[in-house]
Amino acid sequence: MTSDPSAAIPGSDGPRLLLVEDDAKLSGLLVRLLSAEGYVVDLARDGQAGLHHALTRSYDVMVVDRGLPAIEGVDLVRRLRTRGVVAPVLVLTARGTTEDRVEGLDAGAEDYVVKPFEVDELLARLRALLRRHVETSSTLDLGGALLDVAARRVLADGAAEPVELSGRECELLQLFATHPRQVFTRDEVRRRIFEDADSPNAVDTYVYYLRRKLGRGAIRTVRGIGYQLGSV
Image 1 (tube, rainbow, N blue to C red):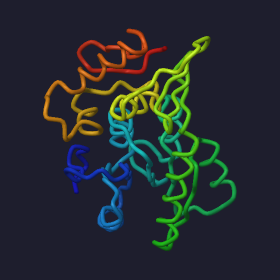
Image 2: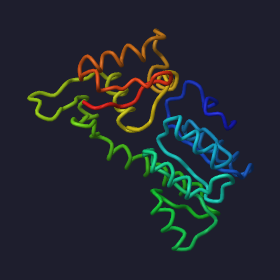
Image 3: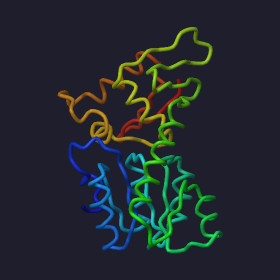
Image 4: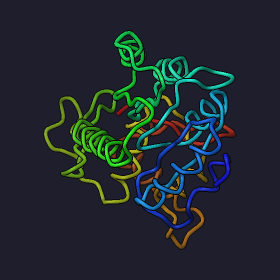
């Protein structure tokens, strides 16, 4: 596995995980372990690369080492939170004091595991983070409306009836709503949601469908880059 996010396991539909770890031996072990557990793993070997990956890709969960070159792990988490990245973060560290844990959690991390750690515990903590993230993301704010992911519908403020969505429409809107400040390229959206679509224009087609149902402002076009959540 390389540090290139495009090197994630092709065709896999498992949770996407960003691992930011500079120790070659440990990162290699974790990539093999997590891939075997069904995660689609991208590896960054320093904090700057981790920041770039997290701001240009969408992840379900992130594992961040604290002692990173370029940008230290807790500082990386803090920068991600200020930029609107909401994916849950588990921090790995050799520092186990209460002060270190509090600093990591206050920066925006959801969990903190001290090295050396038990593999089964790490996997269990990641599963718990994913479960909590899904539960808290079942209803998402669209800016003047709410997306009910389970029911696949949008209820706008003042609207008498909800707007029903297809499965793909709901997945696409959920992606934007979960990362409201992030701009997604067409290629990234295609890999996440439309990898099996026959049409190369599937992303643009479904953006059109959402705009037709929710208004043109629902999805914002960022010229030369891609799409971002607007407001309903």
